[in-house]
Image (cartoon, rainbow, N blue to C red; front, top):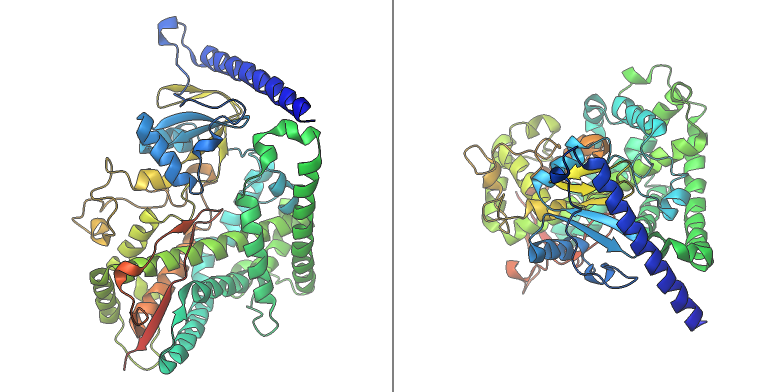
Length: 514
């Protein structure tokens, strides 16, 4: 059996090598001008191993290892082979702009994912579905009805209520002199707010909010994990791995079905007659009201809702925890932020920083930007997929290639940022070295939410939640590390996944101001 397996691997390696050379020749032929002197070359590729390709060079933190690889070989554009999968890695603003703007439509699709096919109903969501008519309809639905600026503003009341609940819990810990697990606290906040947006209430009393948080926690590693068959498709012929992955995905989908079907059914009897004028309407009501207009099936509705849970819970909680950790490691930045927030909203019994107050907090926005620069929730943007040949940074890229934009490598590159490893929110203030840079996809030096057609549609929802919670955390409380701990002891180690997470707990002691 071992001999047979080695023969199969050798034959497959030879076949993929021949296919790869054929794809290169095809790309060169399609991208060349009439003058042969203008023939474009394929992107540079580091030395690879037989069969494995460059898989051995990708460690537990791919954004870090891919940046190291790009620097070692001096190339912002690399063509890697992960098993049998050709992958283009880009690590500069110019190359990212070519992928996300110049050739946005060509690179707008997604590579196949067995897990997404099962868990995401087809996939029928917005994040993983391939580019096409359905994606355009679903994207329009989300940007026109679910996550508009007006809808995010209408959720301000829910944000304030959820923030107030968190402040009360912190107040109890402060009275007892107890430490708070910030990851647990902020994850709970992001989860409950997502539940309010989707379902109209958090369901804390029934415990259903915790069920959704557990589902998100179990789904994220599977969607962002290592799926052998995606790198070695020929193994699908043996079926063993395919059956195992598909079975695990189906069990997870059944758990989502149980919860989402119940929610949709509960809402079917109470669809508002005019949801566009109802500030209290939730996302499920909106989907019910437009399902015929957009031709949505029940499975497609569930996939879109699943997208909201995955995007709304993981990214917001991770961004908040990394931001608080950086502020604790940089006391001067914490003092500046507290001074700004407390000058805009005087301290008082039960005072809450509202959305209206946030407009006058330039340093708060700079702190959030700087945290997203150093710790983007998705340090490598969700893989794009070329539907035709194109050129990136002067290199020929064939069709059928996965494209990874290493946004973290770009936002921490000394060529584009002054003192890139330092946490310095001042760089984004007027007169700072990065004063004109924003994170909404127009500047390719800062891409925490991507850019172009596949940019994250929940950016307004996520940023509003992060700013509201952060402002209130520093407004009402002073924060200290547990006894015996210093700022230098805060470990910023990361765990890579569909959303980047902190590896170690962040325990802080709140001190209530009087």
